[in-house]
Length: 590
Image (cartoon, rainbow, N blue to C red; front, side, top):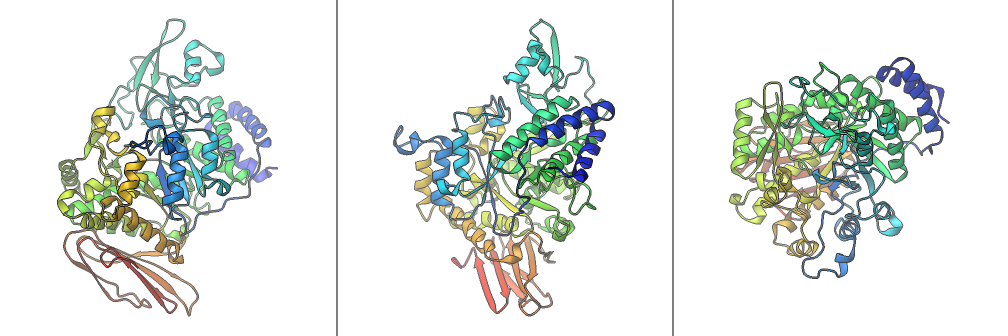
């Protein structure tokens, strides 16, 4: 039973989104839908023991050596599950399975049917197994919710073109001569794509991302209600985090840039309000690869106990700032920005990451690094093999993201031995793992993959450079070689995550302080935790440059002073309560 106070929140949001009679009808239909939904146990937030792994369902290809046997007979999801059972070692607790539905392009982000699992990946049963301890799974699952757009081959869009009244008004359309110059979007192709209806007429459909991905029209309440139904089905299927993909572009209005529309924020708030009304154990995560101030606006009203919108947002400024620090040797912009992050006590929680299935967004660094300095970083990244993708703005095309393997760019071969390269790559991850929030690692970063240079030419798009599906036997063989780059990176990431799990100072609500340092050093103090007589702190010091450096701690109550760092070294020291623990990428095992 939903309480009256929660019903009032839902009603007010629908009035804001639709207004008048439309909101009253929609509210009645929504409440009817929610009355049949199963209530949950309430929200259980993440802790310092949690970490988040990002992977495609078919991330690992069948073995090249013995096709048709053993792992080759497994579905992609089953093969992934068995690999994780062998290799995870408890490091990751959340598993983000990138879109696993039938699709026609963009590696899953052009969904044909949200209620099915693509047979190329497996089945709903395979997904359930990943989250079921009795079947070898141990993960809290993260589902992608691609709400802005869907595939042109979906039954919904085909019904729309056929004139099916059930899908009338489901997609955003405009006249052929529509002036789209004010619209902000992350692509440069024409905004409107022509399609021929069954009756022979031509309709021009809004396509933010590609001609194969048609945008839904959320001004039609039927569209919203359908996605609410799917959201609830995802929760029943085991989703513990629902990621709202490309959510910033959801609401379209003539004369508006059509990004971060107030009604887009209203829809995000509605999904959270639904989760809270039903006491669901699910977090709402928004994906908005935009400048930092616009990104954190998706937390909503800070007066509402940590916000009333997304429970968590991506820390999109982190990847370009760390990359800039490592390529320029200047971590000052990273330090300055980190000092502005909201206190963990506010309840605003970030998903911290460096690499993902997409590229490194450069827009979030706007205003955080001087333009000339960041332009030099982009150029250096290009020299190291990064590809640059562009987006359309009223001022013309501008760089949008760097498509690359993060490893290949921040720890390129010219640094030297696999040990040195792994040390540099782990320094970047030391920053990631030290910050308050939930740390997220892309599968290819975890297993030390380099750029798939052939990918963009083979598949026809830049993002393929970081989306290889390597044969599982090749990956296993390289991980079993202790001197390989893969093994060094993999072991290093697991070591730092295990260290983190053991220290309560990394809890998301515990304070963090960025220490004043110079050059390429980024040092952070987490804590204190414990009682007055047993306070404990963790110092996280990273040298993001190729020359020796030092950190002067000088904090009252912390039994640490000067810390020396070798080139690219990461050094963490936990002190207090009569115990000292330390981990370093130079001195080997803890």
